[in-house]
Image (cartoon, rainbow, N blue to C red; front, side, top):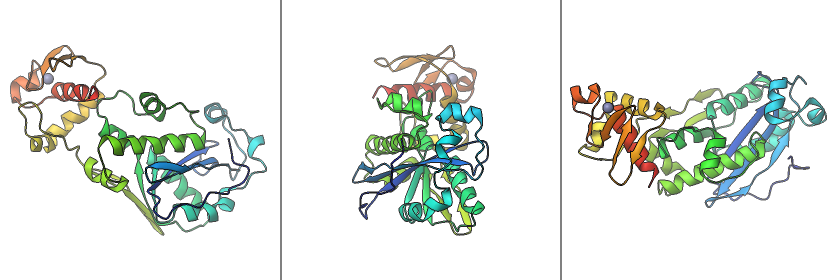
Length: 288
Ligand SMILES: [Zn+2]
């Protein structure tokens, strides 16, 4: 799983982004026991190193061992996070970091740096879970394993290097899906403001409203209204719908739905898209 040494091939200056994954030994944020990185340049992963790491205390929660398979014996003689940091810093400083459930990995990074009294690097970050939700709305699950399966990627989940690689692949596929010229542009399209860490600070990632195109009889700008955004969010949570893609109709939660109408009380009262219409729309998008 882990490279015997930490040598990386020379990275191109125009590295688009770096995918990052931490595994921890227990509930403590700082108990890092594995780190994986995947460097993307020119639309592909150019390096994918990983390290086993000795956490500050050699305490492994059995539940965590079950998840990633890493034990205290395997990391007892490995470097600690602070030993690896000088090299890691070179690869993260000034870049866009992406992780799946990024707030977890960013918190792990920040707390580990604080523990060792190391100043934070300056870097932006983004989250492939949020990217995936906005790129492929209506999918039932957005965990890394579910996304890998949808994209036909075979991997060993909770291996830090492999998780980082899949995270990078998901980000690249989202760029392709949205025809984004680069990773930065993808965030404009999806209305995501990247988070940022810097010495002494942390600005969290912010999600703007999902920008939906016009569909059915509805104008695009209608979908940005707060009360409509709520219905889109509820639509994402609806599990299952019977859809006829050819007819563009469906049955959602027992209601007969088209892109312009629904038999539910919400639609009958407002004559504006209800969560069932959004669910139908998202389902129809999946087939494209
Ligand atoms: Zn409805």
